[in-house]
Image 1 (cartoon, helix red, strand yellow):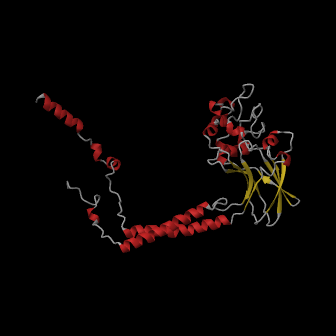
Image 2: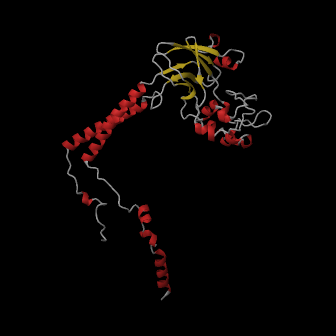
Image 3: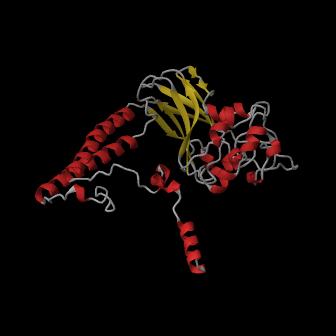
Amino acid sequence: MDEASTSASGGAARRAFPQARSGVYYRFTQQNLPAWKPAMTPGCLIATFLIIGIIFVPFGLFCLQTSNHVAEISRRYDADCVPNAYRGNEQAYIKDSSISKNCTLEVKVLDHMRAPIYVYYELENFYQNHRRYVKSRSDKQLRFGAKYTAESCSPIQWDDNGFPIVPCGLIAWSLFNDTYDFTYGSKEIKVNRKNISWKSDREHKFGKNVFPCNFQNGSFIGGGKLDPTVPLSEQEDLIVWMRTSALPKFRKLYGVIEEDLRVDETMTILIRNNYNTYTFGGKKSIVLSTASWLGGKNDFLGYAYIVTGSMSIFMSILFALIHVKYPRPQGDPNCLSWNRKNSNN
């Protein structure tokens, strides 16, 4: 055997398909296994759109009705709580610690609100999704303590004396610190501040033996302060705040009122307007809301189902009219590529 034939036989041996290529795994990865490939006939397509519409429209109406049964009170207060002498100079008001930040609002209960009633603070034009803001934290430090202070916390990483700040980062530094007290007639309404955060966050993301230290003690003061004697796993205001929002307008849970509010009664809210949103043109509101099996008041889901279902019904009618007016003979399904037998057989 000459050199050329030897080389050819060697190349053929190297190119020989392995036994594994005839197995089920190879046929699966190469998409050669039997599969159901339906031929979308006009009747099938029209029926599919019609069924989607018949299901989606009633479900959307049901979601919309459920949302309408949620009672909600929303009141913006950042502008109303500024004294008349400081209107037009809100930053001077909010930065002057000698000026009282107490503010009283009266709201009327328009619908009967059954407990539990959720109390939220709502911020607008606050971009918690900013990349630098979101990255300015140390999850290891929140869980295990000051020794895990990371560069990612910059610029809120060390205090003026070079000691680590716990918790570090811009998110913790900008902690919301407005407070609310409620009176209903002559009766004070208690707000439950426990269990407002996710249980998984309390147990797995914030350490039970990690305590705040050097927090808001320097010259660069942000939002609220933390009790240095309480571990981070019990600082639920912080835990709620640290779960950043994706949109510039968001609500975060402040507490829960565990008694009913009757219709047409007037409720007084005492607000301590401490949080500075005036510097960046932000807005602050307080929201009281009941909940349903779908959550809080949100009409979007119901309208989305109604619109999608209506469009599906419209498309089914349109396709049916086209099919009736311009019928087209169907081809033989046996001629489809996946129905033809292999020509090698």
